[in-house]
Length: 377
Ligand SMILES: [Fe+2]
Image (tube, rainbow, N blue to C red; front, side, top):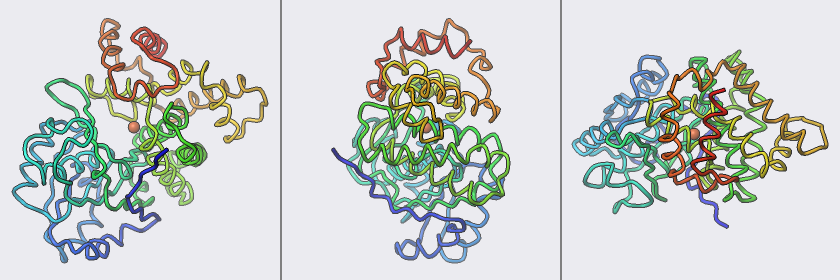
């Protein structure tokens, strides 16, 4: 068994104010911030820029979009190669953090990002990186993977390697104060999906189990409360800690069929990652029930379900997650109006995802079609 997580985590309300001192400790003087225009216009980035501008030379690449595209990353690659920064700072949701990892990689390696699909295809370690998550779901601040949409294939490719962990994750629950409600809902459900899948996939370990179960407890206990009232400090702390723990868990075990289908849907139809996961989490849990009943029952009991019968407790959990998704106003899969004629192609692509073999119950094309049909009811 192995567990790897070299990222230093600095966690707590207000820790963003430590960024200046952290960068000075790293002896960096030129910075490239990789983010998206929404983060800039929302004002979330303002405290970051204001504390850095008098101490460092700061450039910004803010072209990152949801489901970041290979063309955008390659444009970022040109920027980073012309600027030669000492440090890359990724700030935003999973898209910005994954984009920052990929841009940091292109800062020290030639060619385009498509050349690095897969595990450790790079020759040189990426530029040093700090990750600042501004949503409660990505987990990317503590993982070694960057997921980028290859626009030519409309396919989400994974670029990963042991040098791609951010050096530092600066996790400040106060960023949730200004996060729009729908993003709290969808990114929070993404975090819950990370934890549930990490706890049930085949490569799970006793360490990832502990992280995932604690993450599920924290997220389930706080997501709805933070969605309804962001001013609740304890809830924000629980959500952000749950999200980071879930990142460590799935980063060392894996994700399963929910992510395989969600990534396919994201690549083909540009559906936001958290929304796509939310649509499929309860359905895939239903599909996995026959092999994951005991595990789901353990989760249910951690969440306060007292029924001693595993079958009933597991079913109660699936129902609970379905209800949570509805209370968070996550739209159903049917709202995407994807024609059934597309399902075979979605299934074909989903089962080719590298994480498909990790799902606790085998998902072949027929199984995936079963899940897609159930989700569209
Ligand atoms: Fe995810």
